[in-house]
Image 1 (spheres, rainbow, N blue to C red):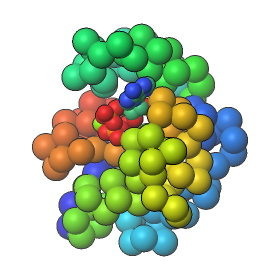
Image 2 (cartoon, rainbow, N blue to C red):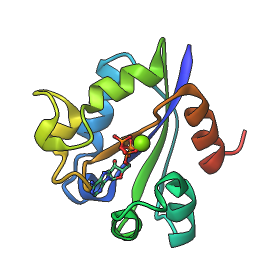
Image 3 (spheres, rainbow, N blue to C red):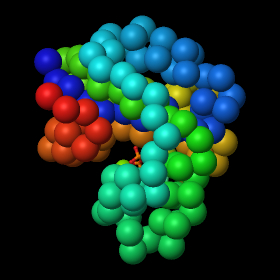
Image 4 (cartoon, rainbow, N blue to C red):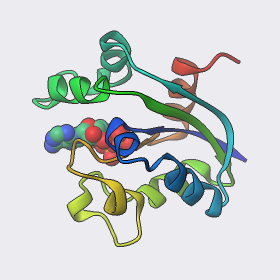
Amino acid sequence: MEKTFAIVKPNAIKKSCIGKIIAMAEDAGLKVVAAKMHTLSTKEAAGFYAEHSARPFFASLTTFMTSGPVVLLVLEADNGVEKWRKLMGATDPAKAAPGTIRKLYGDSIEANSTHGSETLAAAQREIAFFFDK
Ligand code: ATP
Ligand code: MG
């Protein structure tokens, strides 16, 4: 079993899609093992996305991620990291495959409804960033 880290982003919460997104995770066999609703501070958003700090969209991304509450999730499944990334689809909802979460609930490449850890190491780092043991 593998734990991954997911965020339901502010645009999806504004559209009342928390339940639909979590249902898609559960239906795919990803078990919710931790969850909390939280409004990120600018410091948290910048720290979480530190790898993107030199990118032109960084300021806009941190503003978006602090624009309203998010839901922080730890999901667990066999091959959980890849399973959740596949279910989310491509970063840009316009390029995401039909039936994926970002295709269904993403509004733009920035407001793309969900986050998912890219690797197992990233998942462990990101879970520790938001959850204590
Ligand atoms: P995430 O890390 O959120 O799961 P990802 O791994 O698919 O998404 P990254 O390249 O890590 O994509 O980008 C992190 C986030 O930054 C994206 O989810 C999106 O919200 C935002 N982002 C990425 N590229 C752009 C862009 N070109 N313009 C605006 N925002 C972007
Ligand atoms: Mg990423």
